[in-house]
Length: 201
Ligand SMILES: Cc1cc2nc3c(=O)[nH]c(=O)nc-3n(C[C@H](O)[C@H](O)[C@H](O)COP(=O)(O)O)c2cc1C
Image (cartoon, rainbow, N blue to C red; front, side, top):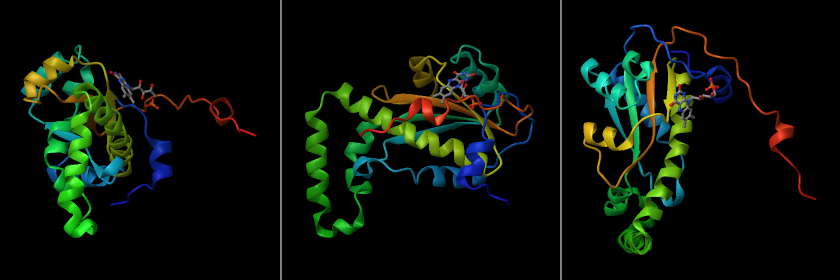
């Protein structure tokens, strides 16, 4: 398969809300998730988790919890991206680099103590914002592997959590509808660099 490089994928990706009925396989999706999981995070915490919704009946329930946005029901799969800092902190030993060797336990304890000293809301907000790095990688990885997507914030988090059994303490940065595009999408309309960049000094 011809994989697009990062610049090609960024240029080609658009929010696509209509799809053909071509299905993405679990194996393709796992490879794309592996690539997205190469996203960096502070301390390598990787607070992101995903639920894949594939059955039509479930996609329709998810669509209902997403203000009826039709791309949720039309997608090959919907990826529900959530941040679970409770799980991340509890299992810190898993994400700490093996290079720490005998110091893994001590490093895990240090990080766990730090996270536990934070207000739960601060901790969740921290994980939530970091999970957007994964989202960026995911959208590019999908396009790079030939799949279109529509990221969404238009949904009711409490309804989505209840439907999918996502822990109450978790947060949901986005739902991503995935499929082969059956529309072009809009040409990019972005600030020129001059509008977002200034030099200091
Ligand atoms: C985090 C996030 C949430 C979004 N939420 C929605 C949404 O709920 N519904 C929708 O139709 N588009 C949604 N979009 C798509 C944006 O409108 C779209 O990405 C933007 O207009 C730029 O267009 P492009 O992606 O085609 O370049 C969302 C995009 C992002 C990144």
